[in-house]
Image (cartoon, rainbow, N blue to C red; front, side, top):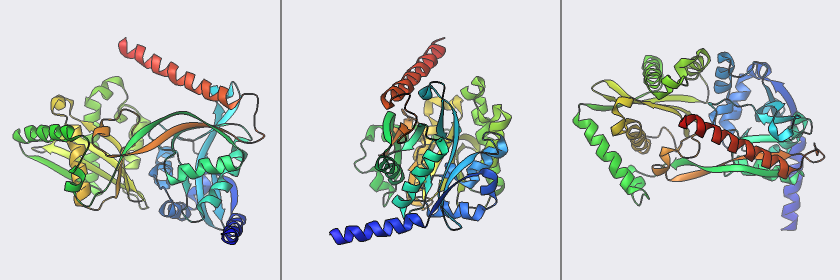
Length: 389
């Protein structure tokens, strides 16, 4: 066993030495689109939000700067890891710069893209790149899926390299792994009353006319489904609040960019529930690495009593089991999602604060975590007061 362990250590050291770290910008990465797409295809947890497709759509829409920087781990001409990042002032630095993954409000996950082969060696190099990118300062890292192999591996590599890591907050995100059949999904479901209620609402909708579920993945059908989504969202409370995608030029451009027909490892999907041809609800998803990541759902709020959005989600679960468009559904939600009573599995998503060894020591890790939690409480209270007002 000792000899085997030594051989493993030698193999890992060789794999690590063959790789290199660099900081590159989005323009340089765009020039090697094949390598970026290749990493997506090889990633151990290939969420689409750091893919070429999504990053470039954000940059074109003006929601990420064109010079967004990335930490890249390479093996020759091949990319083995990528993480977009930014440096800025944050409460956990008390007036000093900290580093964070470069996210937009439409990116619900922040795990780095890391190739499955030589995973832990690559993560060890990536952690070195994190310290270089932050210039020894702390990282504040929201929306890290710490229950995934990539997330667990990243935290392990940080601690192995002498980083101190604290958890600010965490929640359980609903996900659903495909069963052999829809009946197998329904069997022993922990929320049978919820499923019964959704079937009842579906029957009531069907009594009003012809109820159809239509899926679009390309061409005019996809464009029409996106238009229906934008119209439904704009007509509802998000339109009144000014937060619907169609309310701002940048977010409208992002929607158009994300759901344009483009080649690559990320596929797009729109599912529409309609009544006599009238859209009741539309769900938009990005599919990558066998997982359908649900981006957004909009529904006709005039039919709120019959919950057409949730009826659509239940229909997507049925189609998910009857076809092979994905092996997992990821709700891509924050805490308190309505899908908690429908999806059966959970992923743990956390916000962490991480400080490299010999890094910025003017604040303790405990103080930084406390400041981040204070900010969370202040924001929650501000939202509560605004809602009450």
